[in-house]
Every structure is written in C-alpha cells, then in structure tokens.
Image (tube, rainbow, N blue to C red; front, side, top):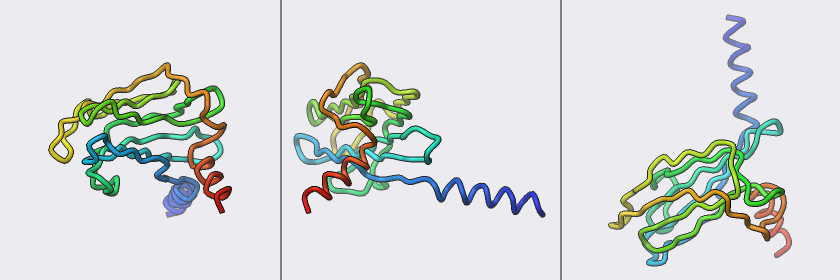
Length: 146
C-alpha cells in the first residue's frame, strides 16, 4: 500500500510539471489544411519536445494526424524549436538545425482530400529565431503588443 501511494505521488508530480502548448500554426497554400506545432515541456531537467500535426483547416490538433515527434530540436545554437514550411499543398517540410531524437511517424497523410508528403529537414539554421523555447517567445511577443 505504501509503495502504491509513493508511486502515485511521483506520477502526480511528474505530470504536474509538464505542459503541452500550441506554438505555431501554418495554413497550407490552398487553405485546406494546417500544420500545427505543439511544444511539450517536462520541466527544468528536460529538453523541449515538439509534436507536429496536420489537421483540416482551423481544426484542433486532436482532429488531425500526428506526423512527427522531435525531442531537443533547435533552430540555432540558442533557439529551441522547429519551423514548418509548406512547399505546396502536397508537401510539408519540418525544418530545424538538429535534434536529439527525431521521429517521422507518417511520411504521407491524407487530409481534406490531399495526400501530403511530410519531410524532416535537419541542418537548416534559422538565424533570426530568438533564444529560448517557442512558447516563451510567443508569450513575450504577445505581452509586448499590449
């Protein structure tokens, strides 16, 4: 019984310290689909994680398909994250400098009548990406606009 309480307390602590936030949404050139980037944060001792979804236009990520998962991805030496770039309505590129773990879960998905190819592109430096995590910088930009 005591072990169960300890395990439950540890799990509660771990989940209480994590977050999952939409930090980027990019519409496809034909407007039928969105590429959505979710930043996950497990706390101070972990790197940021990034999940990429392709959804019907303006839909929740839960209505879409998770196509890629990256852990510890960076856009430059001081900026975490990835960039999403539609090359056409049928091709989405996920661009980043490097990642500790990168998983292409679905190289092709069908969304809103389009067959979309998903490509991971490492080695791409985004020299203008600000330092830190993507949610932090998104919040910072929104506060500056007020």
